[in-house]
Image (cartoon, rainbow, N blue to C red; front, side, top):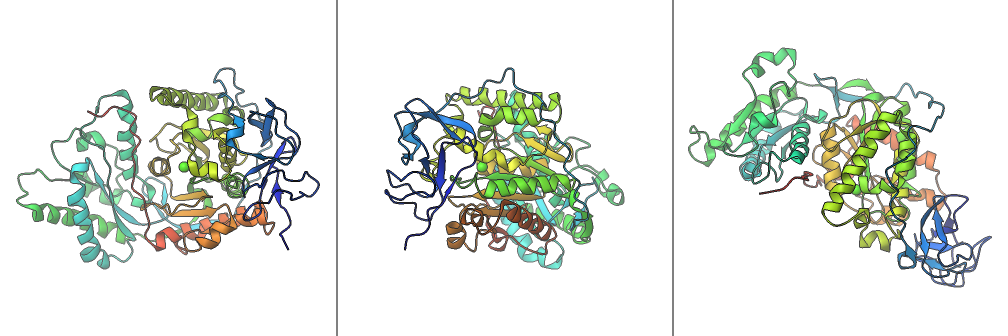
Length: 520
Ligand code: CA
């Protein structure tokens, strides 16, 4: 017997719904209380609930995601080739801080076990990071890291890992171009991530454009009182071109010697009970499908509200995926100044895309469309829900550090690797990543909790996905259930009581800098 037809409609104004059944629904299927399907509709794809005239808006999330290119009878499959995409909303005359809602009630009594840092931030892992000024040193550093892991790390059992912050920047770039500030501050702030305990060591080549003092100007590295003497001598830099280095092995020995100084200090640290307000969570999505905006992202949005209520920091990002909802976001800004900052970031990104002769529609992938997302407008509506309902308190330009608690819009590209890198630079100590098509994404420096949008994905990728939000579409759990499950899992993962699947398999992607400036 065929399964009961299951469709999901997001807003009472919507004239389409998505098919939730595994494998989709066959033509001729009668939807409960709705039309009979004219076409076969794949899972996650849209069906017209009423007759939609040629040129009429197709409404999802209560807004037009496009206009019908031809008449679409009730029961038709509504896919991307049948829709004309609306223009982006203009950036003039947007509502600013107009949404006035009662403050969410505080959420008290939740804690986790974290590593308190000298600058007040809290780490969820205890990792030695080795910062590099330039790609030229990557091979030598990686060789040294393998030896550190094999020879030194076993002697420092309280240190979780050693990570080389490899990147492609540092030379062959227009370092004085105005936009070069983005990759440079990203690298600087990456090395100051709370999971690195304030221990900064650099490997430099010597002749590169990005000199150590430019990367980490005086005063950048926080100095704990107890070790002021050790740091007073200046930055800890191993320079490969130093005359003292004779042969490759002497470079490697220098890196090992310096690493050990930091490992000793990191090893002396212990977890302590801290309030949930010390979480700094970055949320993003990747490999999205039509369920992203129905199951996983709304559950993340519910959890975002819990985090804000607990006094934590939460960042949402991915500029091209919020551009089409800019009016909702400026309305939700905590002040007109925050709304202006948001508009500034959108305008900057519009100009950046225009310089490359594209617009926000360049975001969507073949997989998105196969998964039922017709265009960037529909994708954006499903992406924004990760931000929950709290007022937006802060805005960060790419590569900047968090400015305070509450909900932050951290402007980043939607690219999974670049967004993850920029949120790490902003100071995130926990990452939440939703996926519908499926990606084995991970980061070396920060635990990544992956949330599947569909039960089918969670079942097939049972040892890669940490949470199954597909149960929401199955009717087996509510958005609130999954939101709370995620919140509790965050406290366990932050405390080191649980590992994410990506940590268990040591899966991680490269750090990828956002460099909007020219290379030479
Ligand atoms: Ca992404």
